[in-house]
Length: 430
Image (cartoon, rainbow, N blue to C red; front, top):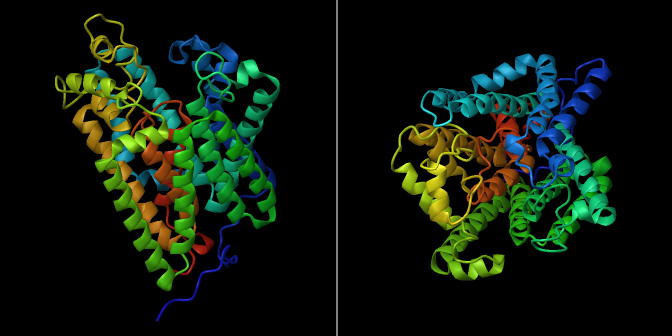
C-alpha cells in the first residue's frame, strides 16, 4: 500500500518554536544575515578597487570583511545554543579547521597561513551561525533577499554602467555584473535562481515576487553567455524537480529515484565515452581552458609533499623562484590563482590529512541531503545547491575558502542539515 501524497507547501504544525521575541530581534537578525551574505559575495571588490589589484593582497579589501565578522559574532550571541548544537554535530568541520591551523607549522608561507586561517575561521563561523539561526522557510528568504539585491544591482550596472557591468577586453559585451569575470557572475546567478525558486515554494504569498526574480536571474545568466552556468542551472532545477517528485511518496517516488539514477549513469557513460562532445557543448577545449596543465603541475608538486602539503593558503601568493607556484606556473604556461579544483586544492595545501577530512565532511553533508530528500522539506533548498556545488567544485576551488560566499553557503546548509528536523521541518515521511 502506498502512502498518501504530501501536500506542498505543508500545513503548519503545532510545536514549532516561535521566532525570538521581541520582533526587532528577528528583524535585526535578518538584516545582519543579509549583510553577511552581501559582504562575502565580493560584489563590491571589483567596483571598489578595479580589476588590476589582487584582492588577496589588498589591505583595504581585507579590512572591509570585518563588518561581516562583527555581524557574525552578533548573530552568534543571539543563538549561541543552536551554534553549539551544530558544532557538536560537525566533528569533521572542526577537525578541518584544526588541520588548517596546524599547517602553519609546516607552511611555506607561515605568516600568510596564520592570517588566512583566522579569516577562514570567521568565514566558516558565518555559515554555521546562518544555518543554526534560521529554519528552512526563513533561511530560503534570507538567501533569496541577499541574492535579489545582487541581481538587481548587477542589472543596473549592466544597463546603465557598462564599464562596470560588462566585459570589454575578454568576451566583449558579455555581462559580468559586479564581478570581474562573466563565469563568476553566471555562477552567482545560478545559485540565485535556485534560491528564488525555493523561496517561492516556501513562501507562496510571495511566490510572484520570487518568480519574477527568478526570471531576472535567468536573463542575467543568458546575458553572461556562460554555458557552464547554464548547464549548472539545468542541473539544479532538475534536482529541485526530483525533490518535489520524490516527496510525493509511493510509486512516484520509486519512479523519480529510478529515473535519477538512470540519468546519472547515462550522463556518466556519455562523459566517459565521448568527452569531446560534452566539451564542445560548453565551448571548452581539451585542456579545459588550461586547467589540465595546472592540474598536471599541481600533481607534480603534491608528490613531493603528499601527506601534509604546503600549508593552508600558502601556495598561490608564494613569491620564491624555486617554490611550488613557480614550478606550477612553468608547467601551466601562466600564473594561476588557485587550483581550479576543490579536491586538488585541499591536497596541495593540507595534504592527505586535509583531503580526507574535507572528503569526510563533504560526504556527511551530502548523505544528510540525500536523506532529507525523503524526510525533510529542507531538501528543496539544500539538495539542488549541493549538486551544483559538487559540479562547480570539479573546475573551481570553492571548498575551505576564506572570505568566500560559496563556502559560507555550503557550511550554512550543511549546518542546517545537521540539526534535528522537527515540526514543519520534517513532514510525514513517504
